[in-house]
Length: 503
Image (cartoon, rainbow, N blue to C red; front, side, top):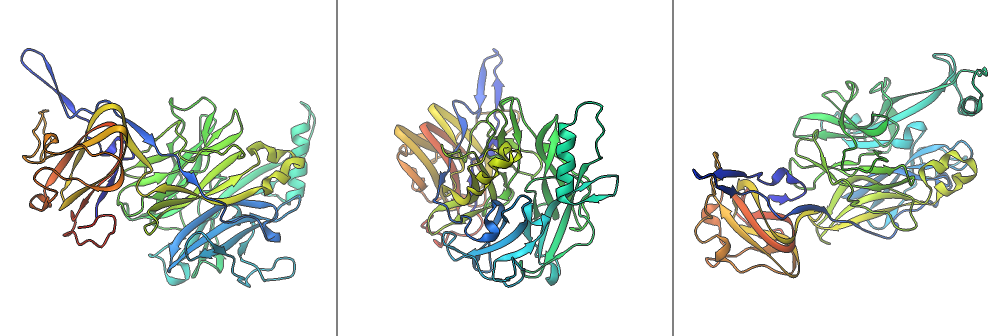
């Protein structure tokens, strides 16, 4: 069932103007009276909170996937203490709501292996887990992560206590005062596993670059390559960079792909990126970047969309996962998952009570323990939509027609939506008429709030005579938002297996 989510202008026909000999303008499918709106998520109750001793320092980055009939979560936890220890922990769930921490028996914690620690070490702090169907069995699961260390003289490794001591002295030193050398170095490293639980380090670094956040790696079927979305820097601000490779163990230098724009406030930079794919829609790439508001030291989440994974449009200034009054930060964690039995999308979020820069004040680090994981939730296929406050019109670019057309929309009181099918969009511009029997005037306005409303004209809802032909969909709406359309049976005859689209 090919669904077209209306997340950006990428799927909307740009339109043009036709001129008459008397120099009158005739608009041809030009969008008017509409805007893109991100749909703010609702937040679930916490699904995982720090409960075990190895989580006493708080939770941080995480990842969830549906794998082998289970929801599987890998998450980073810190132990308590002045210099925290880091662990990559594992949890699993049958429904995504109730999670269990299995005793893996793989790693020692204070004399006992009765814990859910899959890997211990600095690499665990920002690990991204990839299930790799193209790798040999011993590398079926991979990790990309960042690790950092202190150096004195070039190549001289310092332990964490000495590194922090020298850094504190250096920051407090007066001009001209001699101090011992110290600098921080970092690289991207990797791990391999056959089952996602038992991990072996990859001997050589994956990438000799500094990317100190939750970097996301994935297999991109569109490009036939491994891709990585990484912490970058642009004009002194945090930004998002990108790399791709045929060989997971060797990555080329990254390139910057997204940063702050004039639509952003002047104090904004982009923290972690939370790259993921749109569930069930090929060729639609998403990021849920953590937007760092440096004036308030807070972090919330916005939505970015791409049709190629490299060029992005972002709903700047529209938090899609807003902060609650009691939160200081919220970070989205991949993957975006569809829960069809409940009609929901869910995206795991790591929520914290501590402001970002409180970490630098040792007496305030206790607040970092006040963290949890909870779901950001949306109604299915309602991440964003095209909204008209008054009268609006736009045209969705051509795509194969199906047996029936379903619309996912919400109309406010007094609002409505109309649809018209067009079999061609031509150049030079020409206002092509709607297909007979499938024009605006051939249907009654649709009202209310519906996730899968069957579109019907006076001739009925059956479009099987048009199935496989490329058609554009014109939309008129008033005080309404259209989130997506679905052509049931566009790829195969509709069979009624999806309960959203009864045949």
